[in-house]
Length: 124
Image (cartoon, rainbow, N blue to C red; front, side, top):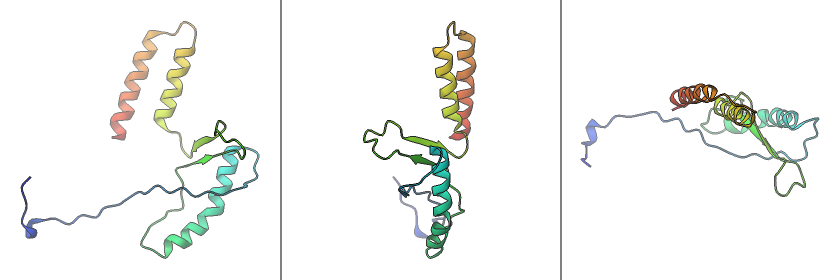
């Protein structure tokens, strides 16, 4: 590895996207999705206040949430819910449905693989 002179180095702005887990316990709701939405709503203002004190931009949005069911020690009922559709998850669901269907048409597999490659290319 060659070293570069100090004066030829360029400056960059780097935006980090850290992952943090914030647990809101005891949320009462009709479904896991509703519980996640309620928790996001409860935490949005508090996070805006907290992030306002440090040099962090929080736009008030959540990409998704993990919802556990109290007492489910093996987390069998836990669900991760994306706020928007996760394209790879949608393709995986379609693949499983294709695989599990009787008389699966092999030409559909080629189409699913083509769509998957396209999604992977655009997400890289």
